[in-house]
Length: 357
Image 1 (cartoon, rainbow, N blue to C red):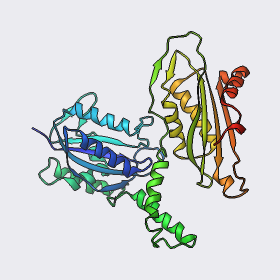
Image 2 (tube, rainbow, N blue to C red; image 1 turned 180 degrees about the vertical axis):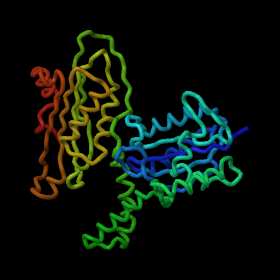
Image 3 (spheres, helix red, strand yellow; image 1 turned 30 degrees about the vertical axis):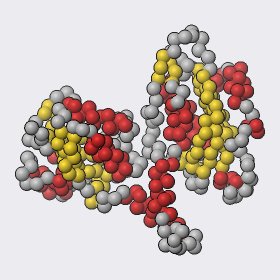
C-alpha cells in the first residue's frame, strides 16, 4: 500500500525558488515517486541563532513505492546535487528536504524519525502542509490547532506567488533602470529585455551563495615518490566585477604539487574556475578563491595561480584604456618559498604581453 507522504522543502541561498523547483523536478523524475500536490511558495523566518536570509518553503504530498530509508537516500542525493552543505546546524542552505509525515505511521530509526520531531513546532512546515491536505489526513485537526497557536508567537510566514520572486524582482529592476536612463521599457526592442536579463543573470551568477566547489573527483597516483608540478594553462573565464557589475574576463593558469599521491581530475580545474567566476567578484578575490578551494579539496604541497584579465570597467568607462590587461598572482606552500618553482611556473605560462585575451 502506498502512503500519502508529506515532504517539506526549503531554500535561502541564491535563487531560492529555482532550487526548490529543480528539487521537485528531480523527485518527479524518480520512477518510484508520484507527486500528487504541491503548495504555494511561502517566505518564512529562519530558526536558530544564525543570521541569514529569509527562507522560501513549500510542502509536497507524494506517494512512493520506496521504503522510508530508500526515499531518504534519494532525498540526500538530490540535496547533494543541489550543493547542499551541512557545515552549520540551522544554517543557510541551497536546499533542504525533510520527510514530515508518512501517512499515520510512526518511524524511529537512527537516521529517520517520522513524524518529524519539529513538525508541530514550525509554521513553515504546517502552513504549506495544510494547503495540500484535506480533513481526512491524519493529524489534520492537530495541524490546524497548532498553526493557530504558533501564529501567536514570534514565527512569521508570508504567502508569495508561485512564480519565481527573484525573477520578478530582477525584471522589475531592469525596467526601472531602462526608465531611469531615459528609455521606454515597453517599446518593441526592449519589451522582452527584462526577462532576458533575468534569465541571463541566473546563468552567469549561478554560484552566488555557494561557498564550496563540490563537483570534483580525486585520484591516487602511485607512479612517483617525487611528485612533479601539475599545470593547466589558458583556462578561459568570464565574471562580473562587484564594483560596477561590468564583465571582466581572461585566462587562468593553475599549477600544484601533489601530496599524499593525490591528484584531481584535470577536467575539474576548468569547472572550478567556472564555479568561482559565476558570481560578483574581483580579480584579486577570484585568484584567492581558486587557491582556497584547491587547498580545501586537495591539500597539495603548494599551489600557483595566475589570472590574466581585461576589465570593461577600465576599457568602457573611466580611463577608457582599451586592450589593457591585469595580472594577479598567488602562491601557496612550496611555491611561496621555492623561487625556482615560481620561475618554472611563470616561464611555462608565458608573458602577459604575449597573450591574446
